[in-house]
Amino acid sequence: MNVACRRMVACLAAGLAMGGCSVGPDYVRAPVEAPQSFKELKGWKVSQPQDEKERGPWWSLFHDDILDGLEKQVDISNQNLKYSEAAYRQAVALLDAARAGFAPTATVGAGAQRSGHSGVQGPPAGGMNAANQFDLNAGASWTIDVWGRIRRTVENAAENAQASAGDLATARLSAQSTLALSYYQLRVSDELKRLLKATAVGYSRSLDITKNQHVAGIASRADVAQALAQLEAVNAQVVNTEIARQQYEHAIAVLIGKTPASFSLAEKPTLINAPPVPVGVPSTLLERRSDIAANERRVAAANASIGVAMAAYYPTLTLGISFDSTSATIGSILRASSGLWSFGPQLAETVFDGGLRDAQVAEARAAFDQSVATYRQTVLTAFQQVEDQLVALRVLQEQAVIQDRAVAAAEDAEQLILNQYKAGTVAYTSVVTAQTVSLSNRQAALTIRQQELVATVTLIQSLGGGWQLAELDAPLTGSDQAKKPSAQP
Image (cartoon, rainbow, N blue to C red):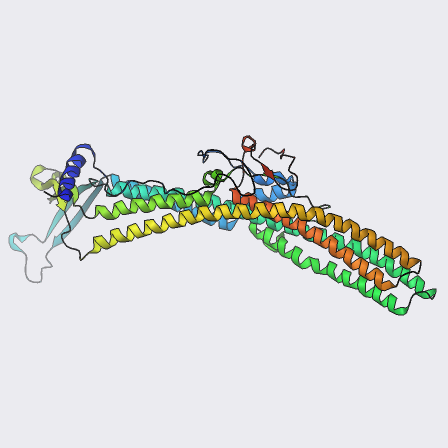
């Protein structure tokens, strides 16, 4: 007796005695390489499962009540999130359907029939023209899971349900992050509009000065035209800011499940600075990122599918029982003389399939290898995303300090040259150049603040979302290294 035959006999005996065994490989989590620390940070701790921890509203780090109110509407009204939630419920239903395979199937049926002769060919023998017939049947069958096909199917469905739960968490975090990004891009548009309006006020004063000097014969008409052109150009930019602002407002409306026409956000007085973000160490990504967890669960599901495919090599054992009774009267239909019954096991085995089962097992193994590669690539991409945002925040912080100095110098130069122009010692072209440089530097400083906010939100998303204050022992990043967030997520 070869090894396969011996295993078949052993599993059959175990299945009859203890409920069966499961063919196919047992799942072992695919190893992935996690660096001890991020390139931009120091520190390390041993990875520990944290799936049960409540993630919390990570956006509370920004201390923005308006954003907080908007984020709370995402779970209620976002349609993409509703789709993912429905997909999760579908996966749970498929798991319940797979578990039903452990239970026997029972059926029952009943019928009544009256039949007779039409009389065209004469009455039937015995002179009776009509007769009654009552039928009652019942049956039950139970496929014994000797080789673990049903158990592997349930295992596959359970892992896919967990993966779907991870997809739901990923969709929720994506919607929350997209909302935060759209919200702060809108606030940057508001800040740019205020900057341009303030600049327009300064340019208007310069125009008035130039007009007065023209009347006094000090400035030329060309200087007046140039001052007017400069003012109108800034006014045009003020109007142009509405395009981006309205589009971000529309995006926010859709994210919270509203039509753009029914939603609006008032301008806010000031734009916040990017808050510090607790980063942790690389190993925590494997604990916190729902997309990593979802892909790891898909590896486990693919592993179970190999067992399902391999179970097809072995015979199917089914226990069946049936009862059928026929009688001319309802009262006698349950009498022993009216019924037939049967009971017994049935063993079925495919002896030739043209290589179908071999191909199905090979397909399952290839799908498993694909899922492992996807899982490992997801982990690598996660590390890259965090490193990208960490380096962006570090460089932006350094750039912001330098740019602030440039803004201060440009504003000082603008005022000095304007005073010189009033005294008649420089031409108006010098004023225009100084004002242009000053506005350009202030816009560059605003762009850096915008990039810091975007990088901060993206870093939080890359880290997997929220956390508890007990987890904030890790190094911080952001615009203020010395200060930890005080809000309780």
